[in-house]
Length: 114
Length: 112
Image (cartoon, rainbow over all chains, first blue to last red; front, side, top):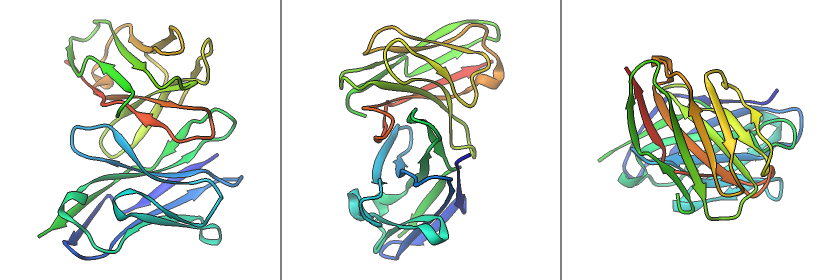
């Protein structure tokens, strides 16, 4: 069965510093992988998705993620953090079967310090 | 959150009361989903509807029922609310199983 693990429930960076949010997945088939962002009291917004077209995926707001099959990882990065990036981030993988069910990680809260 | 609406935004229930959460979309997508979000647990799938006329259980279906009324609407019903159902509920849609999901703004439910 597919699963997702996000390492670190809280990550704190200074404004302008590199953002690295970690995600590891387990999947018996080539996965579809997603990163979502949730701002306080809002729904989830898609940041980017991996669907096997390219291993480096660029998303919105300057975020990108690299799919590494050998490491079963899909880490999210941004070269320079902005105060507005403070939010909760979720990694997700499609569940098994042709149902579209998403399996979510536990989430990582990103704090950006001035 | 464009294209997916949820009502109500907030609700407080007493244990044993019933209520229905409504979700509607205007994007003509085939698949619809109900998730609950609890601190430290991410989002967990309650029920989903791969297409109009079909519904299936997700990871945590106990205590809930759903109705896919038509292609646009997918409702979630709590027949007898329990404090353990205090959560934030999200509806999501997707074109089909292989595409990304779009989420509604959520319903914050408290059961006392």
